[in-house]
Amino acid sequence: MMKKIMKYYYILIAGALLIGVFYFFGQKNEDVKLVDICQNRNSDECKIDQLPYTSSSIPIDERVNDLIDRMSLEEKIGQMMLIERNSLKNDDDIALYGLGGLLSGMGSKPETNTPEGWLSMVNGYTRISKTTRLAIPVMYGADAIHGHTNIETATVFPHFIGLGATGDPELIKKVALATTEELAASGIYWNFSPNLDVLGDPRWGRFFESFGSSTSLVTELGTAYLDGIKSYDSSPYHPIGTAKHFVGAGAMVWGESYNKDFMIDQGESKMTSEELFQRHLPSFEAAIAAGVPSVMVGLNSWQGQKLSTNKYLITDVLKNDLGFDGFVVSDWYGVYEIEKNKYNSAVTAVNTGIDMIMLPFEYQRFMKDMQKAVKNGDISQERIDDAVARILKVKFQIGLFDNVDYNTNLTQDIGSEEHRKIAREAVSKSMVVLKNDNNLLPISKFSQKIYVAGTAADNLGMQLGGWSVEWQGIDGNWTPGTTILDGIREVMSPQVDLFYNKDGNFETDNQLADIGIMVVGEKPYAEGWGDTKNLSLNSDDLKTIEKLKKNSKKILVIIISGRPLEIKNEIKNWDATIAAWLPGSEGGGVADIIFGVQPITGKLPVAWEL
Ligand code: BGC
Image (tube, rainbow, N blue to C red; front, side, top):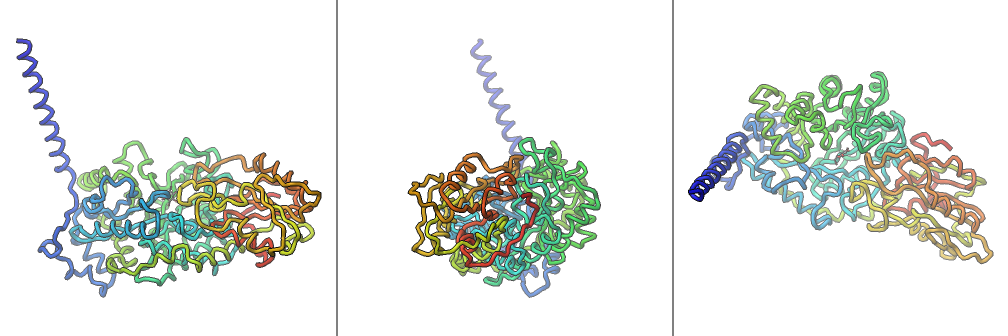
């Protein structure tokens, strides 16, 4: 009897489970509509080649209107999503969700991290996106903030703080163009650069990402960078940059981060309205005047309110007053950090004026929530159409619709000799001489004996800093390039006796070196993990300097860092000091300054207390 009851009981449970499963899938299909895919482009519902928006001979605004009129709500929502490639459950989701954008967060690379690996990955994604009913191409974005440093073999230019020290807009244009050529050679036409933050506190882990602390310098060089991107003409595409981080991210202060792991980053930008408009807005204003098509909203807050919820700044000021007619993109997971309720967060962000949401993970949720939001009237159809029109316009401008079959392989541009030459010029122009007693610099190429020491002397990872193949960078020699030691060896005369020991342990043979060159500084870091209140050299480096001093008649200390370090107490004991910032892959440019191959022209782009 008991057995019989149990049997019915099990049947009942199994039945309930089955109903549950059917209900769940039924619900899912009923709730979320996805994008229609075309197996056969020649079938009636998939024929697009005669449609006006596909014709490059009609004005872009007309193409946008024609396309929008044909789009379903789900196709429009798809365009508003920017997804990190690693969070794709399946590559086919690019088409099923009609994704507008894909990105590589730094470190998110194809299995073979080569130029060809990137090109085939990005082209593959584009091909999938073109299987959708209206064949709208996905737009791929990446951070090429000091070169296309997603790829190991790319040319790595100095981080922006070093470029700021050059103060040379013509050079910045060349750097931007070379970077764009390397990015475009891997099929990417959207760079999340330039950073237009006006710098404040050097304890911030992103200090090196911007040109400096002067509004006019950031504005001038930021505009030059955008001009450099615009001058690209190696293929029929027109790559774009992104002005970031709107606005006032450089004004974040210590101890006010909303992220429990950080001290400054993702925190409060403490400033008056006047300061915001006079010190932090002009670089964006100039970028807009220069035609930048995308603006990224910062993860910072102002007056206790997250920028991504500030409708006044994003819609009224940026779009209406400044006349920005490109699209606004949010930063990383920022939108879902607005509040706990994700539906409300997304609704707020879109209504604030954000057009493309860097989700960057949860596309299923967003697709469902936006459909609900439009149905409920929480977001108007006009707001969706405006956001999508802005995004599509830029896609047309880039040429994504018209050049998908463009096939010339330009991957030889990545890490080319020509680009490395530009980087080397940028490095030498970015060197700032902080001290030069008795004109020690330039050093004679024909000195008899030189000692070189220090953790950064033969260390590409330190030269490159953060945002280099991995988000936080990688210490050590793991990438092609010229270390500072290599550069010294290359530039000095072959008859010099040069000895290198990282720790400054040299055999004393009673003959002091004419000069001891010490290269020290910061290990790589990025964003909030680089927030620190300790800006001193570490004790091992200081000990090595002491050893070197004992063995050398004079010492030159070269500092590799993303920000001014505290060397006030030590610099008086050194004969010469160079701020080399984060010079990138071409250490030869440092040697060019040490030995006088190039003149010293670099100037401090930020204050440095000495
Ligand atoms: C940074 C942005 C960057 C984005 C995409 C964020 O963490 O704040 O500057 O463009 O990641 O990698």
